Length: 220
Image (cartoon, rainbow, N blue to C red; front, side):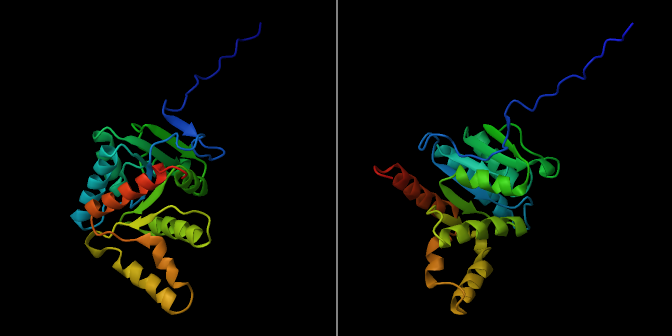
């Protein structure tokens, strides 16, 4: 008499989790709200102004009816911006690679939660689903993300606005480095035209409003 084999119980992914085997943007242009991709640290940093700026930005994105696109973590400045956007009823789109689910504590209460196989897919999905890029204070990962989208802009792969939120002058050394690169002949002076560095969320919000209006204009 043969024993009946029983299969282990199926454990589905959380209801809001999507697997991004082939990263792709939302299918219909204009089908998603104006989407702001936020790159920022998985740590809070030493200056309390950094966390406050993240919260203020998350709230402003939600209040404007825009969508937050970010790295799906619930730690550091990532957690601050997402918590503020969610608390204000905002649309949130998080993207995280499978190997960082534990380390960055993937936030599961997002409108959409996408799990990618690696970091390259994560950055691609975030970029393709955004209309503007904002870089808050952060470390090597944030710098990597910033320089990638800046390089793509420099070689004509996109025209999305890029903003460095220069909280308490955090990005001044980076801006000085870019000026140095230009001065030494390794980039055209126009490189600086591809980004702006507002010093506060209010100024950034006004610039994002202009970018949103330009996206909605006829013929764009």
